[in-house]
Amino acid sequence: MGLLAYYILSVGFVCFVWWMFLRACAERVRRWAVDNGFAIIDLRYQWIRHGPFFFVLGHRAVFRFTIKDGKGRLRRGWIRTGVWPPARTEARWDEQVGPVRMSWSIPLTCVIGGLVLMIVGVFHGVLVPGNAGVSGAPSMQSASLLIVGGVCLAAGIVLGLWRWRAGAADDIDDPPEG
Image (cartoon, rainbow, N blue to C red):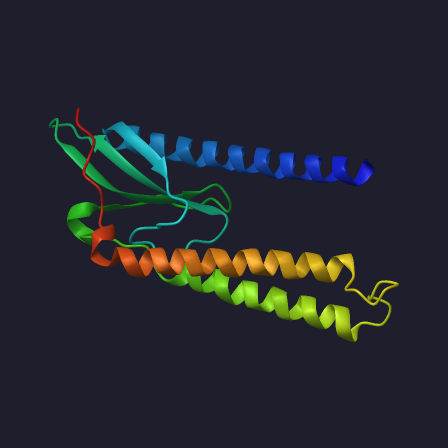
């Protein structure tokens, strides 16, 4: 029971920290909009598609936004911001970047990471003395590495197929009405 409680608390803590991070980033975007005289109509965090921002570290977030400018026009774009270190807020308008598609970096990262985890899982059970169970079966750590690696590999393949199939059809969606 103790191990299960530890996992539940750990996952809960990570989710709470992520939620606080996204709230802080969204607040920075709202502040940017007010400082520039815009009214935010729609603001969405981008989990997979980072738009024109190729490289996004874990301490930065990318949002897709729709704003109303001072003249009443609706404009759409992408914005990257963060909370640590004090990161500047960078906005790119759709007129500047054109159609944006998901990059290949996420599917490739998943595939490579999954393969590495699976290889480590296999060699962990074979090369490290004392890791095989009483019956010679792989240890729990080896099995866990194989399972997590398989899930990462499958996710990478699915995302890659989605990216390949979408091609040019994965362009930016239409702005909301209003």
